[in-house]
Image 1 (tube, rainbow, N blue to C red):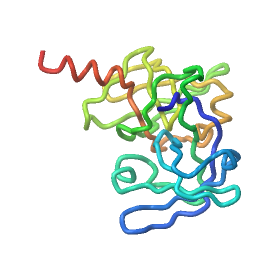
Image 2: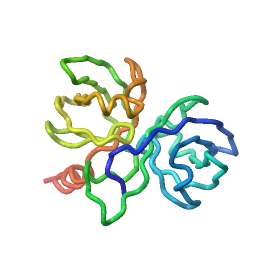
Image 3: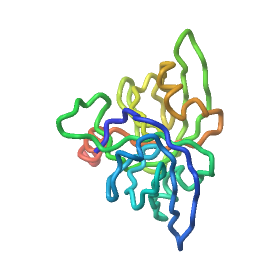
Length: 195
């Protein structure tokens, strides 16, 4: 379980294929605090630490993860947003994030306005996912509030701190991102289908 509040970024150091899996080596300032078998969100994707080597650690992504997220498109030198799983005694500063990406989206517009940056994302209508105005959504692991909700499209407004401390600063039109829709909304939608 995560909150969508990013702790730091990690740099992709190496990518090693093994069958349909990819072992991802990441350099991070939080590596010294990690342990093997720990869950860690990478752009919102929950992956398990399988190895630690000085300032680097290794996680493994399976075919399902590579197919349904932007993890399969990572290249050496890319940066990923990192968040360790939450502790029960911590504040829930974002919203309930499972680390299970629902699908990807494409950034279709970026507009800077008086201290905020508005990002607009478009996603395919493959899984019947929705956003609502002022609802929560997770983009590359970042907990955000929807400020513009349309069919298969939404916008979010980002403060400068978030832009500078996440990989949002690398986004441009055409950037592929991971989406996790609000778990409460998903349950409500499932319960009301067919009524």
